[in-house]
Image (cartoon, rainbow, N blue to C red):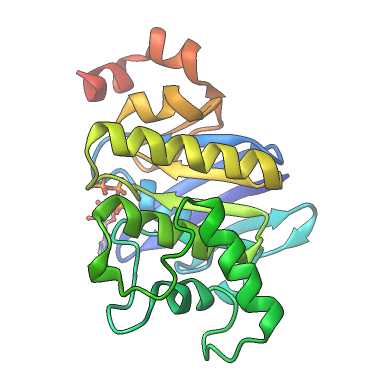
Length: 230
Ligand SMILES: Nc1ncnc2c1ncn2[C@@H]1O[C@H](COP(=O)(O)OP(=O)(O)OP(=O)(O)O)[C@@H](O)[C@H]1O
């Protein structure tokens, strides 16, 4: 269980309050108006932003003041964060060791992850020699090799066309199901939530609300969400 208890998260001068729980293995979309604090919420779980009140925990262990690298969390960013001078396999390997000193078993893990995301045989290429969709898959493979319990996605596929994005979302959902990972995904598109997320956390007016069922919420949105959905 991912718990945010009575939390106040600071992003510069902006505060987001959160008091909510996310069940293990759940896939939860984070939606709400621009600037409301969606990224702030996931970055606090990742450990990139300070929690000035309350507590974040995972299965009972306190994460609140734990360094980002020591949390059971992997994050997928919008631009994929690929290094152009490294090969695809090395970019994935960064998920295992930042210094890329990897043993043979670890290179095999990387190969297996590349195969799993549909990039078998492409490990020797540089990112520039891949399409945008393939680059997203490299970033996903890097998250996969980390084998973390919680996967955070901050609009990772916003730059992809609709069909590619749908394919990537389905792949994320599939990989999370296989590994049992808990997913928290920021998105501006309610269709992303409908596609893979059973629940939605609405972030509005400086507050992250407890998760609600996606279909019930989007079929019958409360006034604040209705204005945002248009
Ligand atoms: N470094 C900063 N200093 C001060 N305020 C900041 C800083 N970074 C973000 N903010 C403010 O924090 C608020 C929440 O930002 P956040 O990026 O979490 O919103 P969001 O809901 O993810 O927005 P979007 O949908 O536009 O990406 C915003 O109103 C923003 O202006």
